[in-house]
Image 1 (cartoon, rainbow, N blue to C red):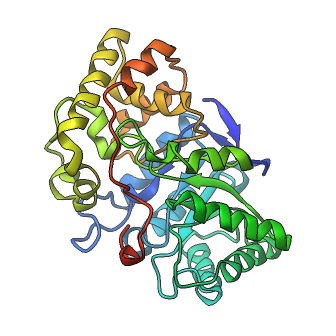
Image 2 (cartoon, rainbow, N blue to C red):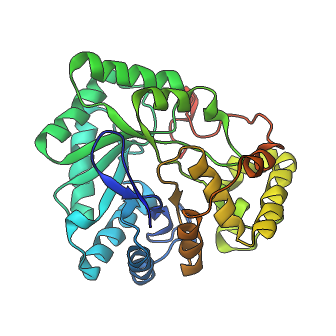
Image 3 (cartoon, rainbow, N blue to C red):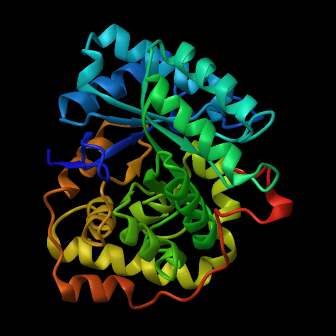
Length: 329
């Protein structure tokens, strides 16, 4: 496994991050395909055995049970706390990013994870209803209190991220060190504004959905898995651009065959070649992690990258919230 540092924090993470939305109590009100506590522990242990030390969850995932299952797994495995990097998120909760909500939710997250600090605390979306100053000061207070080592942001418009960084800078507060944005071969809209802003601030990118909800791991559109059959979130993200994106998927398949690797390896290697620090991979089966880790050592040529990117056409914005979408994950 290879490692990198998150922004200017000094926090060293594996080039693959475990996406823990895949773990938690299954529910028709969230996701029906998530893994229970025993399977979660097995997956977490396998990731650690492969050299992965970076885990991302959120207070909203499976109504908090994702954090519970991750914390329980790490405790049972017995790995020292300082050997893992734990990230969680706040927003999809009462009060969203108000000071009161942030101070309440961090304590809930730490309790469910069974730890007294987070390595990385991320705002899950931009909050139109709370002044930026209130949010950034509250996050800074968590860093000063030792509850959080670094802060990050997720899925928002470039101008929003820039304004929040400027706010922190002017007030001497902690700046964001990471951006967890929506980014993969089938969705590259952030290359226009958000990614250049991240580069301007030396912010590490740790994108979610690097495999487009599994679409980039197999030929065709449907996979027949429990997630493919029941996950409305994935359908809302990608089904509207199906006809164009099938061509991208086919190019991934063709290149994978040419290189003698899996489509997963090609898709993740592309993200790493594009300057991503650590794509967040939500695996539910052991071979998925194995392929993700192999991707770290796969180097694509300029010709390979151009071939993969050639079919791309502009997409509707998916991830960053408009004012009317404040409850959409």
